[in-house]
Length: 164
Image (tube, rainbow, N blue to C red; front, side):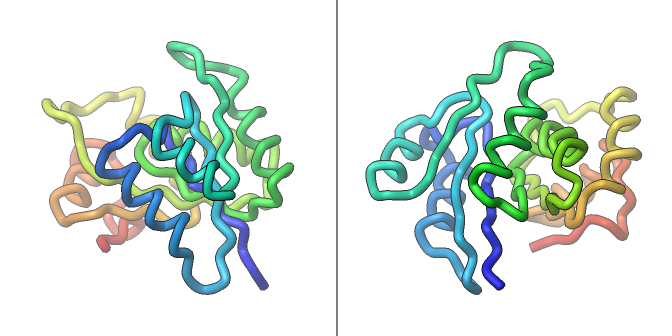
C-alpha cells in the first residue's frame, strides 16, 4: 500500500528544514507519494517543486492563532488523499494535531529540527504537549540536544521521543 505523505511546514522559503523537506519530496522512499502543505506561503522552494510537477499548497495562515487552519489543513489532506501528516517543527505539528480532530484516521508525525534561543519553558506549551502527544504517532528529534529540550523544556515523555 502506498502512503500519501503531506509534509507540513510554515513555508518553503530557503532554509535548512525546508531544503530537507524538498529532498524528501524529490526522493521519496518505500512507495511514499509526497506533497507539501505550507501554512503561510509556498516560498521559492515550494514554487520550484510545483513547477517540477509536485503538489504544493499554501493555507495563508493569519497572525496569531488562526482558527481556520485546522479545518483547512484537514480538508487539504483529505483532498490530496494524504494518510500521514509529517509536521516539521512545532507550529505545523500543533495545527496538524488539531486537523486530526476533523480527520481522525490521519496519522501524525512531528520532527523537531532545532530550537530557538533562549529556549524557555512555557506552561501553556507544556499543557498542550501533555495532551497532544497522545494524538501523535511519532515524535522525532534530529539530535540528542533537541531530544533533551523536548523532554526538559517542553515536557514530552522521554520514551516517546526518537532521535534520528
